[in-house]
Image 1 (cartoon, rainbow, N blue to C red):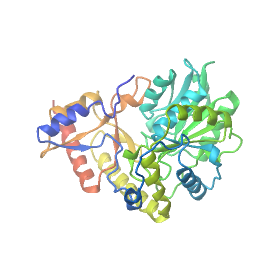
Image 2 (image 1 turned 90 degrees about the vertical axis):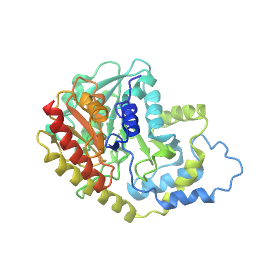
Image 3 (image 1 turned 90 degrees about the horizontal axis):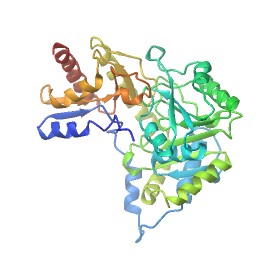
Image 4 (image 1 turned 60 degrees about the horizontal axis):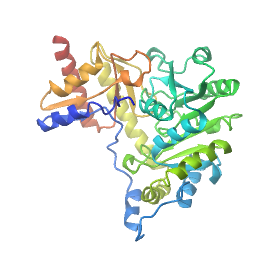
Length: 387
């Protein structure tokens, strides 16, 4: 099981805090935006005297709220039997891997990729095979010939994350249709991780794999409430598929783990009262943070990045040879005006040997803290190079 590049430096961060250093977290996608009161207030409405198991599929109330969400936000009509509540998007990915491939099979991942895909593949006994994207291309999908070169007789799945964690890239409809056609041609499942669906900037929109035509039997969508409503701690997500055999396989797994979080489902239904104004406000805030980060990083000599199009991450190349060593040094040997920054070394987001000089940055801090983090990073790079 690989160590998490997002969390493996956490002991160094805790030691820095114990020394009295303020650690500005740019390493993890934990939003600081307040969880909507309509969700939190539901806790006070919970009258159950026994916190019992919920149905393995999810409570009828929560599944109904998901159906309303997909119809309202995407224009897609889903049946109750096509939605499965999961313990976060993480469980949905694991279920999809287990349902669509056997031990020893392979999954094509677009690298750099969400690091925990490798962990879920390890749990499922699958081999991760990278399809590399490049920062110079904005990390957009390569031609299908590149996918074809990664194919073997054991390939079963292609997984995409759109909008992308860790790059912030938003794939176009043409890109998704091209990958879907590739999956259709080669008999592969398409797992689409759409956790950051709302977070798209500059007036653009993310296309869901559920909107693609002719691939209903191939598509499994992974979703989560964590980022959408700044509610990471409730650990509630969903798996969506129109393939009845895949759904039935995932349902048996869901029955094996008994039930998704019942209290989380109860409070999540409160999100139904949120209108489009809420989403626009959150997206505007993240777009502003994106702009602050992008301009701030571009002003630091030697730093290269492509402007993120969505989610709240970017991959930045730093003027260092070993970003992991630099990230550890930040936490053990550096501070500026009482503060340092925590970064996620990007080599853990690659299955190949790439990413050694790159980091993933999450712009989930308010503007004041983000600007301070940029100043600390600028000074840190100057001192590190002087070493």
